[in-house]
Length: 211
Image (cartoon, rainbow, N blue to C red; front, top):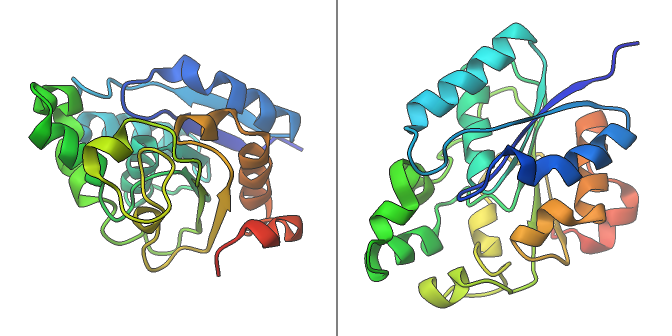
């Protein structure tokens, strides 16, 4: 049988090679994985999402895994094409306080956030109908985003846990990882593989999940 197809999407200030370790873990779990790059500062959201949609149109049912901004991109594309399941890694589905803090408080911050600022501030809005979406969030507060945005409550150094939750998620789980650390976390990769296969997280992750 053919291996299930997965497109991986990186986050802000990253490139496709940043997802290679995560890709290797998913390949070990039986997936055909393709990290996909986009210009996270210079490219418009519409152009980036349109390229993801074209990839989905070529292979309908392809799953998507997106880190941070990449998760928001994945959801935008899944609303316009026949996608499989979507896993978000620390994506600010409810909007990013850190992005707002950088844009408003850091000299040249608007340029640093780039053309996806509106998407980061707005978040996902509503989830695509008929698409199962799972969230793997981190709770290790290491990163400059927390200082710039003065994040309230548990966070991963860049995104608050509260920002990773919106109505309609099929599953939500928290792992001990920072925002960047999510893409190098064995636990996060195993959970993502589990959700892509079954539409839920493993029973062994129950203690880490937030009800």
